[in-house]
Length: 216
Image (cartoon, rainbow, N blue to C red; front, side):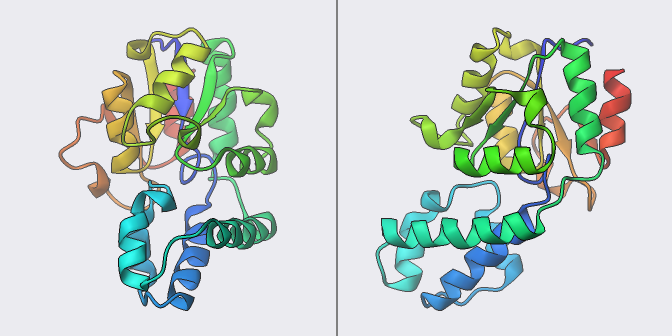
């Protein structure tokens, strides 16, 4: 099948940012009084915006989730990302292949704040391929698992969502892509794709070379 567009998630798909971001988040939540380990933090927060768990954070810490706290989190997170971020193995090749396959109709549709997504794509050397086609769920009424960010990306590039390929690494993102009507592939570089169990992903793959070969 030839796709009209390829829509990529960012964190965990294009860049290996999740361990960094969640490490900072866990440290700050521990400082605020919520003691949780890294595995628990990843289970609760990966694939979601921090604000989506506002009620739980406030219940566990006994403190309101303030804008000052969020700004401090963003600052500490971005400092670590600038120092440590790496692209996912083969991700740049996959972006180039998708760009060629679709005649440039690719986009990044993330649940993270847009400034972070733009920074990461620039650091990964992918900015010239995406241009202004970077979308954040923070800018829409609903973020993932709602389909809004994928529908916005498809509309911007004039693609029928049902003719789009979405690349996702979390169940939250997969649901967003499926509800947008897209074909969704689940990317799982470490493991067997358990995160996608019960979800009708069209394919689970473990290395970006699979995507590159499929788009040739």
